[in-house]
Image 1 (tube, rainbow, N blue to C red):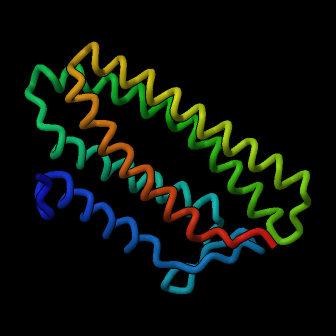
Image 2 (cartoon, rainbow, N blue to C red; image 1 turned 90 degrees about the horizontal axis):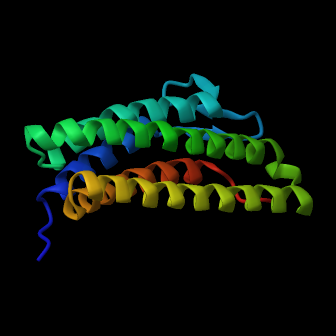
Length: 174
């Protein structure tokens, strides 16, 4: 039985509140800008990068608190995690480039551009799944299936929250 308010639920709630508190801005995709609550603005790319940096820090804290690893497991886990984050960030960078391309063209999106963005987005998502499978196997071999599953459970929640925050700032294609 899963009880609300325990384990990952509390940690994810803290992350959820932190990400959404950070991101209470308005997007102006026509200018590629995000307007912050204090009236200042920044580029959409800078906004995404700040969000990612903030999230990386929080994610490490969440993992430290939620994984329940002993000292020996930590020595094995963190190098695998760091390699995973390094490889995953390359795919995330590609996703940011796609978002920026979308923001640039969303007002006057042609079918050709829409198809290109859609195809690149789906290919990037496929690559992320392949990478997750690769690292799930590495983690399972080095630690255990339970540790790998726990990590990817947390990782999935964090990544979905980031995607939701970014996607919620993007207007629908006109």
